[in-house]
Amino acid sequence: MTFTQAFKTGLRPDPELNFVEWADKEFYLSREYSAEYGQFRISRTPFIREPLLELSPSSPTQKVILMKPTQQAGTTIAQIFVFGVAAMFPGPLMMVMPTTTKMQGFSKKRIATGLRDIPCMEGLVKDASLKTSSNTILEKTFPGGSWVFAGSNSPITYRSDSIKYIILDDFDGFVSDVAGEGDPGDLSDRRTGTFGKKSKTFINSTPTIKGFSNIEREYNLSSMGKFCVPCPRCGELQYLIFQNLKFDKLNLSWVYYECQFCQNKIDEVSKHTMLPAGEYIHEHPERKIRGFQYNAMVCPMGWKNTWLYIAEEFLKCKIQGVVNIEKLKTWTNTLMADPFEQHGDRPAHEMLQQRAAMQDVIVPQQALFLTASVDVQHLFLAVLIQAWGRGDQCWTISYQKIDGDTSRGAAWKKLDKLTINRQFEHESGAKLNILSMGVDSGDGARTQVVYNYCRLRQPVVFALKGMSNPGKPILGAPAPQTVTYGGKKIPNGVMLWPVGSDTATATIYTRLQQEEPGPGYYHFPVGLDKEFYLQLTAEKFINSRDKKGFPVRELVRVHPRAEVLDCFKYSYAAALRIVDSINLDKLERDLEQQIRSKTERKEEKPKKQAFIPKPKGDWFR
Ligand SMILES: [Zn+2]
Image 1: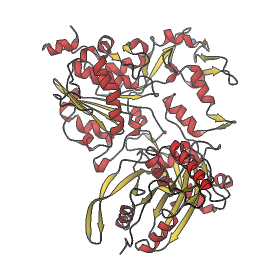
Image 2 (image 1 turned 135 degrees about the vertical axis):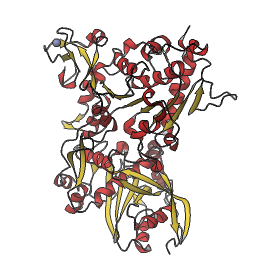
Image 3 (image 1 turned 90 degrees about the vertical axis):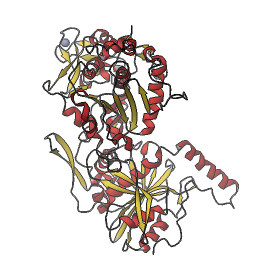
Image 4 (image 1 turned 180 degrees about the vertical axis):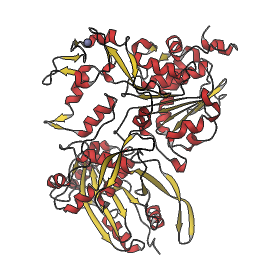
């Protein structure tokens, strides 16, 4: 009799049973997402055994934290937890991913296939496609419990009904403070209330930037376990680190791991015996929150992340002898599962000014679309126009100030002329419009003016607000705002987009320190003055401690004015806002098309890009 059948026939499952034993008997991986589909074997990925044991009701642990590389069984833990709960320990479960779209994708790819392929699930959770079923892609019920799948950007996530099991997946991508509903970091504390000590929370993510990473913060509060494996010769348990991986740096003809205790040369095939003998060593075994970290060095044999692959990817982070910071960050996060530490508190403004090389304001060939951003001061508007290519490579086209009282219309009309009512010449000869323009509404005395300006120029122009609390995504989820115009209130008149200030600065600074053009690189035109570069580097990272006494990185202002840096943040947010919805291949084709039609029929005006805004007449009274 399976566990599930036992449950269905009214027999209570043995509380001593755990998710590891259950998964080894009952859990199946599907061919849609796993090269090793079929019956699950914990022995293939021994580093997920202890996290699964801690998530089992037989353990008193309530909170499990996992800091992991990408695509290495982390999601499997969440899946086993979801299905195991329905099969053995039913109760309300909620799983949250960064966005509702991602969650829908997960439900279709990982949950629907599981319901089809895991034999003991048969008949337990009704198929969402059946007419008799009240189940949907995002909400499913089963005897004694339910699954709710939600995005961190959805208000559903913040409802008040109590949840016994919570999974926060891909935690570094979470959107904070959705419509003022609160911080997702406090979700488990807020929603597991009535289940008390029987509740379980599982938080996992690949880390991002050191000092700003959500999962790093949670991991540092935990027991801080690392998956260690024994040396085949001396038997000493150790966490495999890249520094001890030795390889042929010229043509990768050999690779081995050097034991940190006996300097034995360990061959990768030894993983066959080392991994099953591995175990977690916890730096703080006394802590109740259990934390786990493993990296791609212990990737199972036969999977993509071999030692040679890790070394090869590391070498790719250097191009012509210069380190590409963006690539090194990705390598560190996704393979080493470590937060990326930025070096230097801020980029050197002299270095940036010296490298300015763009001779004119024509949009370069590699750039595909334009953004603008506006920092709103009482007596002037600071306006930045940037061009973007693949991989966020960015060219600053112009930075200008429009003088004038910004509570009145004249400055704003000049802004139209300078930005959305203008066409820009592309190196190919085509004409480009600005596709996304973010306007800062953070100054309370100008908020309604900005809202109204943006309302009449949607969807190209949007209102944004810099958020000072740490660790927020660069572009959060938008929330509707009421616009007060001419004494009338217009509910939902405009959408307001939050911008995570310190996260944006960290990313921009990392990229500014990149020395070789390519993805993530910032290009500057010649002729911008020293003040421009001083403002661009107007903030500095310092090491400090948070409320709980843990070390964090903090941003402080070191130059009196920072409109340029603010404009850079808003412009990046403006690019992020559209980059998923535009097709770069199509933009490239459109540009070619424009040039062709221009040369074929010279008398006709070139075709305009999509999203042409039409500001209405005299919007400002
Ligand atoms: Zn050894």
